Amino acid sequence: MIGKTNTFFFIGALVVVLFSMSAVSAADLKPIHVSGKYVREKDNERSKLEITQLPGGKVHVDGISLYGTSRESGPNIGELDFVSSLHNGCITYNEKIGKNYYKIKITLKDNVLIVMENGVVGNFGMNVSFAGEYHKEP
Image (tube, rainbow, N blue to C red; front, side):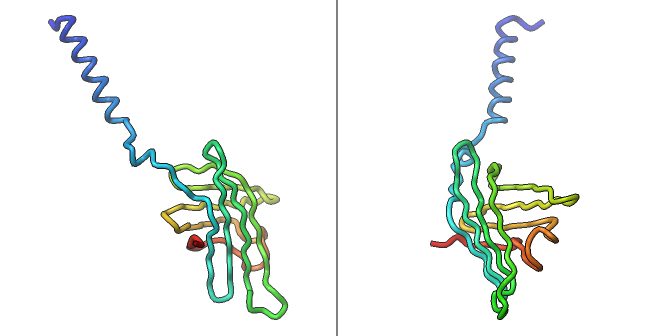
């Protein structure tokens, strides 16, 4: 039979072990600074995203994307403007357009953004997309 002292010691040690297993390291608590202007350029395309950190883990994303920048008649245009949460270095946003859904996921890695989209067709001008790799402007 285990005595009361041994039982309390065992429970105390178990609590310490469980707590240490779930503890977050100082590196995990390091704040992510995402505010800034990010640009993506290709042959006939140019996109710009401006991200502003807000209180409470929120971010404001404002963007413009152009397709056909060298066309005489001018480019097709797409715009983004939304507020979302920042979780584990990712920003996601969903919008219902008619019967379809538009979804964007922005992954932050140092001074680079990786943008993935679903449901682009019909949301912006013809061939306009925000998908790709963006680099932070100095």
